[in-house]
Amino acid sequence: MTGRILIVDDDENMCGMLHDDLTHRGHHVVFTTDAEEAFEQFMSEPFDVVVTDLRMPGLNGIDFCHRLAENRPDVPVVVITAFGSMDTAVEAIRAGAYDFVTKPIERDMLAIVIDRALKHRSLQEQVRFLREQREQSGDFEEFVGQSRIMERLFDQISRVAEQPVPVLITGESGTGKELIARTLHRHSERRDAAFVPVNCAALPAALLESELFGHRRGAFTDAKTDRRGLFLEADRGTLFLDEIAAMPLELQPKLLRALETGLIRPVGENTEIECDVRVVAATNKEPEAAVEDGEFREDLFYRVNVVRLEAPPLRARGNDILLLAQHFLQEVARRSDKPVKGLSPAAAQKLLSYHWPGNVRELRNAVERAVAMTRFEELAVEDLPPKIREYQSSAADADSQEDLLPLEEVERQYIQRVLDAVGGNKSTAARVLGLGRRTLYRKLERWGL
Ligand SMILES: Nc1ncnc2c1ncn2[C@@H]1O[C@H](COP(=O)(O)OP(=O)(O)OP(=O)(O)O)[C@@H](O)[C@H]1O
Ligand SMILES: [Mg+2]
Image (cartoon, rainbow, N blue to C red; front, side):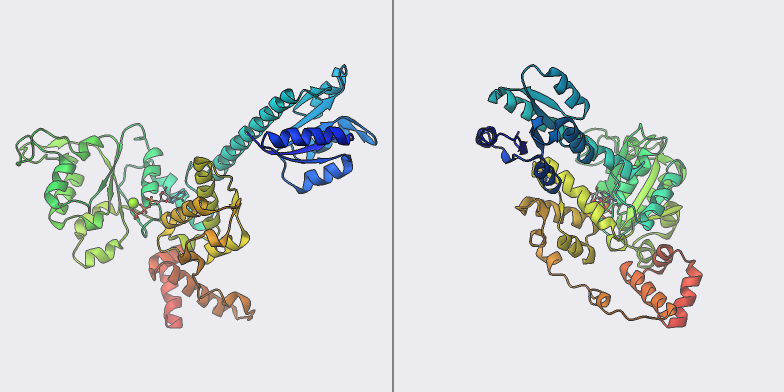
């Protein structure tokens, strides 16, 4: 393991010798013979380890250790002590030093101590990162979000998780609907049984039917054996019916019946089997519109729409965009062992002003790509995909004009912005705004929107 090392010793020859030796071992080494200067450098540059002599003119080595530890407790300090002054070494460690080596310095010994200090530091950093993540996400493990709209969603999730009622999750593609479904399952009494996802739009009706309900051997040509089906796989657990509004129309009555009776009938079987599943469904098409278009049976819609959760589009989540970007960045950096730590301010600005049609999934892909591309420790604008880099938001210019407006005008403009952000859906907009639907309609009518 290599790192950035600061060496402090009043003996210039010693500094030179340590510098050459450690540089040769792959470290980046800076040295100084003056303790005050050392402290200044220590505070202005990121170092991974400090190696310091304890006895220098004009310096109390113990105070120096205290000062380093107080300001940057995460950077381990290795002290050099004269042979036979164990008491000072112990004192230094009490003052926050990580370890010591005695003079005359054995270079291999020093290298080993430094290596251990570096490992210690990197482990500490990992632990801190994990802890911060924990604290930040509260109960919801890998669910990132601190915006009002997400706080409200977390609140709803924790309230309905324990109830056995069906839940319908709506939201654009990539907004985290499946993550919500999994979270509901994990926070329910059913957490020890299976969570079984099934994409209702991916298969033709006949195949999906035997996928869901199973079949008897010989029920059709390819049915060589009995098959249990996903309903039974999810017995006592949660069945996640993804893209439910796009399920083949002819299968919808059979699903409805299963949900109503709690009984399923495998294909080719005469008797029905009892099955206890909690149903969570999702759709990225407005279900009301799908009903109107005749693609989604109204009775099935009512059946699964007992509780409705809405995954808000990413562009309506404000600074969550940056929290998520940082979350994915750290995850990818760790996985790919790249020393990427954050976003440049300009890149952050780009992410904030983009409109994210692909939502969280698009953000995740953009960050993954950027981490793979970058040569820096901070992702730069040039690391971002061209679509995001070159995006011009219509609101970008608005910030620069400081027009002072009447409150009602600000309200009108803001409501318009929210409406745009949620794709014109008034019920969602009302929820985002914290207004009753009626109130919102009244305002829109007044403004002729
Ligand atoms: N709030 C969040 N915090 C962390 N990761 C998230 C969050 N929301 C979504 N993700 C991640 O974004 C990706 C997309 O989420 P998910 O698959 O749940 O979206 P979806 O709404 O089901 O999309 P689609 O409609 O395309 O099926 C996943 O990798 C998911 O883990
Ligand atoms: Mg999904």
